[in-house]
Image (cartoon, rainbow, N blue to C red; front, side, top):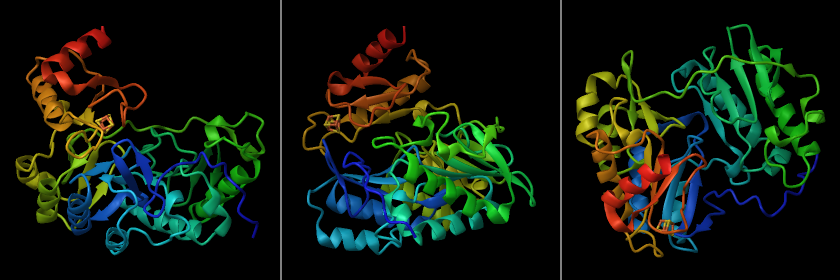
Length: 365
Ligand code: SF4
């Protein structure tokens, strides 16, 4: 086994054991390979978050979970309690277990588990950047819309494609884990310092040796709404509350966290009303699926504005047709703009929903 290559200190992707100290306090990110998480664990996390920081669990664009507004350093009982949820099976590899999978294809989960086990058993791969993303996709191409570094797309029980950097090659399912980890090792060996993703490698990088130009089918992000008997439930602002978690626990033993501010609820279509009552979004038309916010006051020590009520009012106005944008909107409490993503219209909240909507009109024009 090769030794772990040194990564530059600038890889600041957080975990539980190495939180990031953000403007609103310490931030902990918990990986959920494949997105499957028990609803009682979600409830426990929201309760722990509320006891120690902001009473919310944030869903990330990589299908992971974040707790924010926490004290720095983290209290030891908090760390022990989060470890007790079972979401941290490997201390050394906690930040590299970034594995997306198609939420609608439970048959891919054994491959996700095999990849996670092999990744955690490989000492060298603890040195991957925390931004390196694995994906396990179905034949429709979900979740290949996301910016993965290496993926396996299973096309049939006998065949599939290894994908990286816009290229690919056929690989049998039984060889998929080994093939993905080979690419990860090649990345560690060849990526110049400061390069975090396969897409940033030069076209002649040895990481892409043996792969050929390839355009796999891509499925778009799943909008909220029923999918057969299941339900994609949007999580407003991407922030899961105790009320949401309790409703999910009432109707399902586990859910699948998606990278699109939602959770897939198995057999959830029949209980959509119960979930809507708790504030989840059971259908696509609501602006709640494209509006997000920083945690703001009182959870952020540096924030003087309560951003969440403003963001909820912005959603209500957009849903009522009194707002003027269809772009993603991110409401922040100050110029630090925490959590804003590329492509978001960013609105600073102190002046309230009226000013936010007026400002969005000007940005979108
Ligand atoms: S943008 Fe929001 S979370 Fe960030 S410092 Fe300002 S109020 Fe706090």
